[in-house]
Length: 276
Image 1 (cartoon, rainbow, N blue to C red):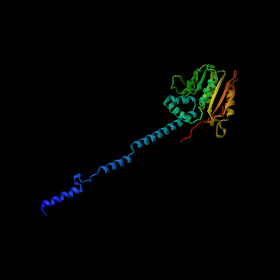
Image 2: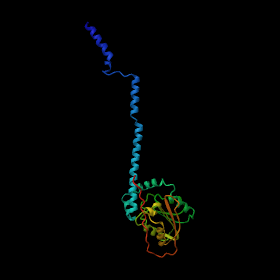
Image 3: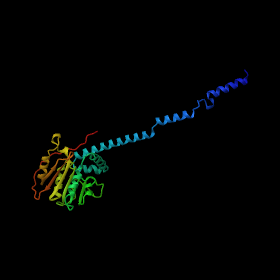
Image 4: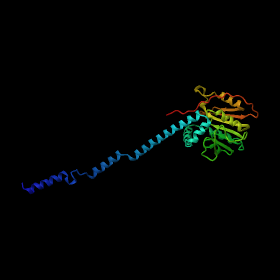
C-alpha cells in the first residue's frame, strides 16, 4: 500500500468518527430540541419562585402571629400604665398587635363593635360617647355622634393616647362609655372607675368581652359577680346578652345618686391565644 493510500484511509476513518466536531459526536436538531425540553422541565423557575414566595409568606405570618401573641399576653398581664410605657418605647409594636388582632377577629362570625355601633345608631345622635380602647377608631367613623377615642397609641389625629384609668375628660361629661374587648390590664377596675367618673347620671356603660373570660368552668370569672361589682360601683344592670358564641355584652346605666362602697372585683381570665 502506498503512502498516499494510507493517508486516504486515515482521512475516511476520521470523518466516520466525527473528528471534525472537535472529538465530540455531532448532535442532530431533533436531539437538541429534546435536551432543551428536558432541561426546561427539570428547572421549573416560575413554579419554584411561587413556592419560595409562599414559604416566605407563611414564615412572615408565623412570625407576625408570634409577636401578636407575645404582645397580647403582655397587655393582659400588666397594668395600664406599664402597657403605655411599653408602647411608648416602641410604638411600632402597636401596629403589630392590631394587625394580629384584626386577623383573629376576621374569624369571628360577628363583630362586637358592629353590635355596639348598631345600638348607638338606634339612640340619639346627640349622645356623647367615650370609646375606651378604640383601636382604629372605627366606632367614631361609623356614627354621627361626638366620640372621644382613647387608646395606648395614637396613629390617627382623632385618637387620644393615654392610660385608660386617666383620660382627659371632665367629670359627668359623656353619655355613653364603651369598652369593646378592652378590659385588658390587671388594673381593669380603675378603667371602669374612670368611666363612672366621666359619665353623666343615667349615662350608659356598654361592655363587650370575650366569652371565655366569664366561664367559671375553665377558670373564668363568674359573670354574676362581675355584674354585682359594677352595680356596687354605682350602676344598674339593664341587660346581658349571651347569645353570641364568641363574646358577651353587658349594658349598664349609671345611677343618679351613688354611695361609695368597698368593691370586691372578680379576677378576669386573660384571653391568651394558643401557640401553633
